[in-house]
Length: 463
Image 1 (cartoon, rainbow, N blue to C red):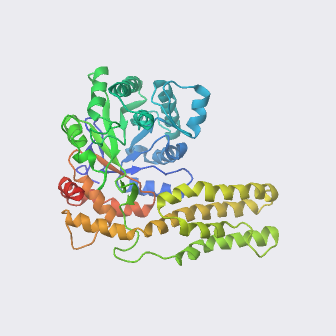
Image 2 (spheres, rainbow, N blue to C red):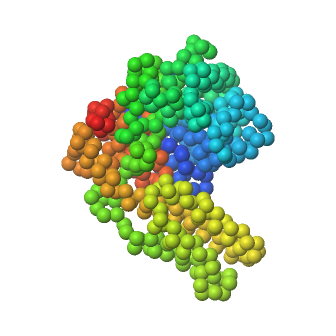
Image 3 (cartoon, helix red, strand yellow):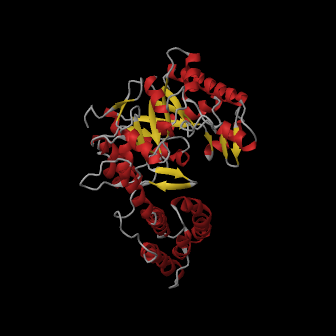
C-alpha cells in the first residue's frame, strides 16, 4: 500500500485506505469473520467501522482481539453508540437514563451524556483500547422518526433534536479532553434525504452545534448510506445549497459511506453483487438437498450414537428443506432465522443436553452440529441471493449505459459499484461488509484502478 492511495479523513489528521472494513453482522466466535478481517488488514486496509450495537457487542470484541496483533501500525477504529437493544436494554431498564426514545418494543435509542458515558466505557473494554479514534452518534434521527410515526414534525421538534445533538457534542468534547476519544461525529441514515423530508438530518446544523461549543471542536466525521440507487449524499442539495459531499469537503469533514452494496429501492433490497457468472442461470431447487446432506449425515450420527435408531431424531435438515424454498430474499431469511430455525433448534438442544450432556461424546457432537448449522446459514443466504442474478445483470447493463467504462475484462458488479463511489470528490472511505476472505480478495485493489466518472454516472443512473 502506498501513501498516495490513502485519503484524509477531513481535518482530523487521520488518513484511511479508501475501502473500510464494515463490521455489521461480524461477530466474535466466527472464524471466517476473523479471517476476513485479518486478510483486509494484511492487504493494507486500515479503517475498521463497528458499533456497540453490532451483534450486541460481539463485533467490537472480535475487533479488539484482532487489532492487538497490529499494534505497530494500528488501524483506525470507528465505533458508535446510541442504540438500546440486547445487553443495553437490560442496562437501560436498570438505570432509567434521561431522554430515551422508545421507538418500538425492543428498540430504544438515547444520546444523552449519561448513557453515552456507559457506552464509551463498554466500547473501550470490548475493543481493548484506552482511546477510540472516532466515536459516532449512531442514527440519532430515531427522535424525529418516532415523532413522524405518531404525528407531524414541527420546527420546534427540529430545534429539540439539534439541542440534544449539541449536548451530546458538549459531552464528547469532554471525552476528547480526557483522552477517551480523538474525534467524534454522527452516523445518520437521513443525511442524504431531500429538504422536503421532515426527518432529514442536516450536516450544516450539526456543524453549527459543534461550533457553538468550541471554535476548536472535534466534530470531524459523518457517515451515511450511499450506493447506486441511494445517491442523495452526492446529488441532493440539502446543506446550504450543497450536497453532503460538497458541504463536507468545503468544511473539512471526513465522509464515510455505508451500504455501498446493499441498496434499498422501491421497498426492496438490491444486493449489488454477482451470485453466479453474469448471464448464467442460478442454482435450482436441486441444490437444496446437496447443501443439507452434511447436516443430515450428522443427525443420523446422533440417532445411531445416542438413541440406537436409524431414523434421524433431530430433524433440523428436514425443517430447513421445507423452509428454504419459501424464502424469497436474504432479508426474508434474516426474518425467518430466529423464530423458524434457531428457536426450534434451541428447544430441541436444551432437553438433549440434559439427557446426554454427561456422555463424553455429546460435546463433540453438539459442537459439530452448531458449526454445521452456522455454516448453512451462510450457504443458504448465498443460494437465495443467487436467485437475484438476473437483477444483477440488469444493473450492470444500466451502469454501462450510464457511462461506466466497459473494459475488455469483465468486472464483478460489486467492484463496479464501489469504483463509482470511490471516484466521488469528498468521499473519504467506503465501508464494505467483507465478511469472507473472498470478498476482500474481490475488492481490495479497487482503489488502485483508474477512477470512473462517478457523479456523472450516478446522475444518469437515476434518470
